[in-house]
Image (tube, rainbow, N blue to C red; front, side, top):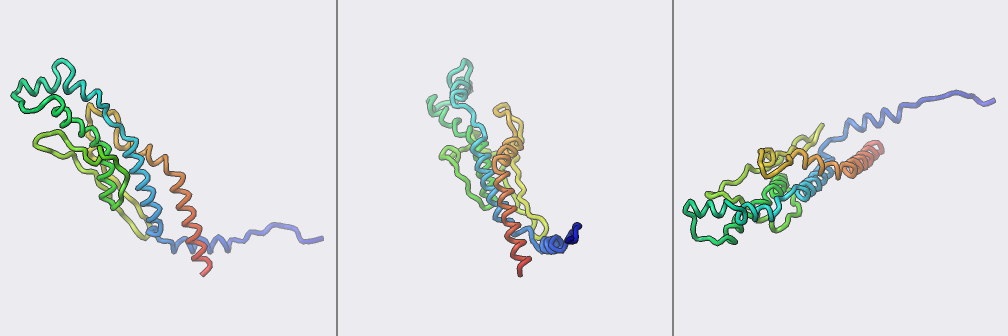
Length: 195
C-alpha cells in the first residue's frame, strides 16, 4: 500500500509574500490614471444640464421674467434673444468642472463644444470655484484625490451632488479597474519570483 496522508507546502506562498513586499504602488499609476480618466469622462457625461426650455421660460417668457425685471431696472441695448444667449452657456458649468479637474491631473477627457465654452453669466464675471485633483503616494500607496467644490455648493438649479455623480461614474469602471490591477500584480509578481 502506498503512503497516504496530506501535505501542506507554504514555501510558494512565502515566496509570493516576499515578492509582494517588493512591489511599489507607483507601478500601478497607469491603471489608476486610466481609471481616473474614464471616471471623470463618465462623470462629465452623466452630470445633468438644466433644460433650455426652463431657462427660456424663466428668462424671457414668464410673466415677471428676468428680461422684464432687467428692463425695469434700466437695462438696455439687448434683445430678448441676446439676453437669453448670455445666460444659456452657464447651464454647462457643472459639466465643465469635471474637465477642469481632469486637466489639473494632466488628463484630457472628451468635452462638447458647449461645455468648452461654458461661462458664468455674472457681470462682472465671477468664475465658480475651480475643481482640481492631486496625485499622492509612491512606495506603499498611490492615489488620486479629487476636489470639486462647485458641485458642493447648494443651488436651486441642481438636485444632485458631486459625490453622487462621481460615485455613479466610479461604479461603471470599477470591475475593469480591478481586472487591470490584478493582471498587473500577477505579471509583476511573476517577474519578481522568476528572477
